[in-house]
Length: 366
Image (cartoon, rainbow, N blue to C red; front, top):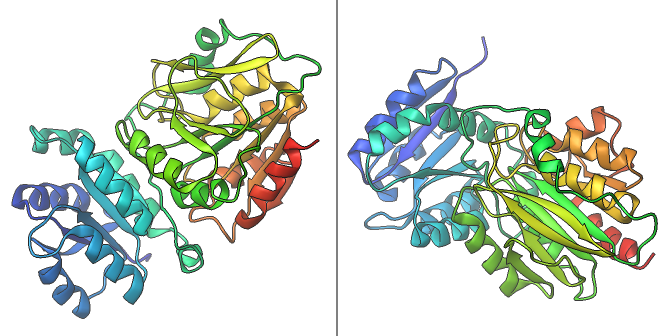
């Protein structure tokens, strides 16, 4: 019989601890072995029974969650899920936690907490299961940011149900253009992977469009952080933004992003539409728009992440003549999305994370 996933809950709210414990223990594969109101109590308990996954608040008395997270990652790297408030302050703090090594974010509102958590029970359980299977070896080599599994909407709507409406406004790719673009899709583990790539790129690198599965409000803080660290300009995308060399546009949480062409120029369109593959933004939505509007004038990259979002879109890009790359299993935190794209025959090259930036620069000079 497969051992249960051992979970430790650390949150100063007794209600959060009680509700999360009840939700997680309903799943037969998860066991909440302990809970604590702050990191000091938590470490005492963890020393006697170390968990497989820690669900951690970031704003607590005596010791904040980020300091505790750094201790965990130094002493004994363990998958940590951040349980954060859906506020501007909570988003900025959570992005710092991702940078310190957390692998996921679960959001909680200020009001109606019990009903919210019960409604999103499937998301929390899925995040814990994904975290338990995370490969933390890359963290030992990356002193960087981290990512999240994002808050996953409950309904899994297939892309073919949504794309006809989205496709209506897209213009077909030009046969030849000097404007090239790079499309990147990622999820769990993606924040640190993206930082690894973007920090190595020059200001003359080709324009980049990115879908990173992340909750609403968190993508702006994430893009702002990268913008301060990178030579490229990194922005949370706004409707109509141009895709130009030296700029990376991150799809806003809670909305889809697709690429459109106007003459030989590309810009992004931000769309309110149902979740695709349980995600909004969806990598498939972005990749399929790039396949249609840019075709062979694009480079597609799929990186670490849970699930299969982006695999079908990457196949469309590949079939349209785009170059396609997948991150290899060894350097992925979760080898889910790249694996599915490889299985579909959608990938030209499988490479280590450290090689991706060089390939982007080389592509831009062709």
